[in-house]
Image (cartoon, rainbow, N blue to C red):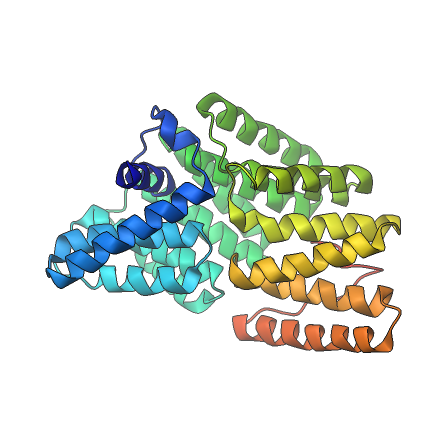
Amino acid sequence: MILELLDTFTDLATPTGVRSDNPVATKISVTWLYDALAAAQDKLTTLRSETLALEFAECGYRVGRLLLVLGDDAAAISILRESCRTPDLPDALRTGIRISLAQALRSAGNYIEAKTELDALFADPELGSQPYAVCLVTLALYERDHRLLESAREHCLQALTALDAGGTPYHAILCCLTLADIHIREGNLAAASDLIQRADDIARIRTIAWFRPAWWAIKARAAYVDADYKMAAKFAAKGLSAEDNYGDLAALSTLYRIMAAAYERRHERIDDATDARTRAVTVARSRGSRLELADALFELGWHYKLFANRPTVRARGSGLLFEADKLFQAMGLETPVHVGSVNPLL
């Protein structure tokens, strides 16, 4: 049962197909995913010892995808690279592995390697329409991270057109939420609202709960940018409650950050804001993207400097800002400019 669940989830999460009519696939809990990962890793150990190369690569692909969605980028990169080195892989499998590898490299902040992998995939004349669309979404996320919002928006729109012609509901939701996030950063809240609703419609029709926390995070970010800080905190709280059931853990740090920012803007519940900021860093250190960790550290550092009463705590804020700056430099990104009382989440 667990291995069937693993296959179903990785079908949802990869560009090679989807069994969206399977009710099990739509209600996958994080606990199930960890159980599936343990079972698959046991199988992987057996396959390695038996030197079954193709079976090992197929299982490694599934393990890599699970590690990626559970936020362990380093382990995902390691097994996906090992799987990709297997000789004589079927083209579809190798393409799926390389797309997952590009996604993991971007999440890990290894942007040069991620872009190199994406460029090679785009240069493949045999790249199918759905893998092409997934590559476009990954490229858009890369560009969003580098604040290249115009090109990120264009690539997301291209991906959405391709996915409308025959993509999986998983990737359609991911693309809608990514494009909504880009619109919010550009200040186009009306366009973002339409995409948030579109993602919700797809999720409800397919009863896919995995993206619910990320969906609440996008709604919270939109409310925050619209200066509706009360609703931003409320939406973030709803997203955090969704994490307890069937939700993507990658959104956890973002939800804490938005909740804290909303409290700070309203100059209330500062102790709760401090707690949320601290939790955001703790979660980001263990799962989520490297950029998420840098942002969480940056914001906690400024929070301490602005709201802490004790000089020792304010000094701790300087240390966190130094750590964040080192991370931004290591990723080849500019450290954000502090604006106003808190980082504007843009």
